[in-house]
Length: 112
Length: 112
Image (cartoon, each protein chain N blue to C red):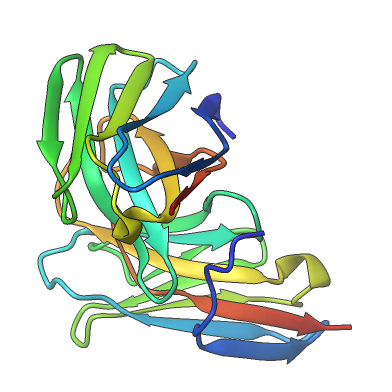
């Protein structure tokens, strides 16, 4: 696969533990945010989104938290599984053209 | 991958030659995008299209042009490839937002 994560921050967790991945976004005017998961050799895959009028949103095993005061997003993954090993990106946009600006990513390594 | 096909998937070309990458979608989404992905930079928007014949620049558009003559096809052209354009290129599609963008599998381009 592509070597897109040569110098990425890495989070290593034990299988079954909870994971928290953090992201500082750049534009205080951004009003829509997405977390993407990217596996080696594949394109980014949508995980969960949140609008700026919310501070928390839950999906299946995942939760996104938004703190607009400090421009911070986090992704919480419950009961992390080996299949969750990937690079995770936060993305922000501030218009309805969905022009996303991506963070540089965090590599999640799940140890069996 | 949400009905998105990128071609070619891999290409090696020489400096100074023109290169065209193709993105084809079967979802009839109005918006289409080209991103490039490089280590340490996440994904960066090159150009996007908000309708047939309607395109605009993203954050790293220098050296690239695009065309969209049909809803389903979005072409990215490097008029004269340079080594700095060695990258993985992703096409994405989206409905009018705010909503998620769906990504293709990527094209690995190497300029030698």
